[in-house]
Amino acid sequence: MGKFIVRRLLLLIPILVGLSLLIFLFIRLLPGDPASAILGERATPESIAQVRAALGLDRPLHEQYLEYLGGLTRLDLGRSFLTNRDVVGDFLQRFPATFELTAAAMIFALGLGIPLGMFTAKRRGSWIDQAGTVISLVGISIPIFFLGLMLKFLFAINWQILPDSGRIDLVHYSFERITNMMTVDALLAGSPGGFVDALRHLVLPGVALGTIPLAIIMRITRASVVDVLNEDYVRTANAKGLPGRIVDNRHVLRNAMLPVVTVIGLQTGLLLGGAILTETIFGWGGVGKWIYDAVVASDYQVIQSGVLLLALIFVLVNLVVDVSYAFLNPRIRYS
Image: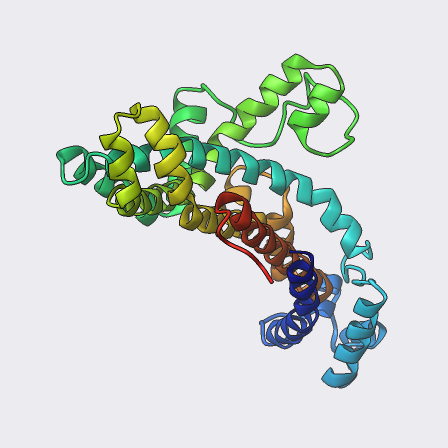
């Protein structure tokens, strides 16, 4: 197991180097120019040339990339062209918000997706199974921006049940930001009202973001459980008269979880990459909105370093998923 993990970690080096090169070249193809974004209306050809020279953008691309790669070897991911703030510092400040939103979305997706998938699998071929298929297809197909706007209109504007944006009511609740996750910080500060308010702010963006993972997890769980239900050891357990709950938990669900865990890992990694649409609609100051603003402003340093950090997180999440296989199925061994 240890050798497998070390080997996977070593493979990160060529992956991240190749990804850094692709990102570096791709963002240079995007329309816009950092110097023009910095100068705004005051931009003139002369001032643009001066700013580009100050930022090193007038140098050949290979020199710019080698300088950036050298910074990566020193764990220096650079500074924002617009704010001159450290990219890693900005990322660490915003990532807890994205993590909190991702956790809420995945709790919603797992809390409904796995039970519904197993429920429909045990009633395969019935109208319940067909209804579940239709619902999951709708969940996968509906655009996030449309769902987010509809949820916001109905529950925040029309019925005024839940807040429409932000992470907490700053007027009524103020406490020290230790982790920058509002629910956790409210508990650490001993503010139950702030914790409840932070949860209320999580509901709409969490549901909007978790709908697609919910539909995918439900379909994969259903398909995997159907396959396991046809196995001999399940039929034997039922023939021995074991209670249905024991058969489901010990024999069906555990053996059906491998493909489900794979999907959960992939979806979690994708959501941790920043939900640009959801964060924009609900005013959620996470990584997705941060990178979106950097793309609009052509802030090369934030884009290339931010995406690289997200890629690192995605690969690490998938490594955790691979390692978890051995705990879910003792027959799996890594060498």
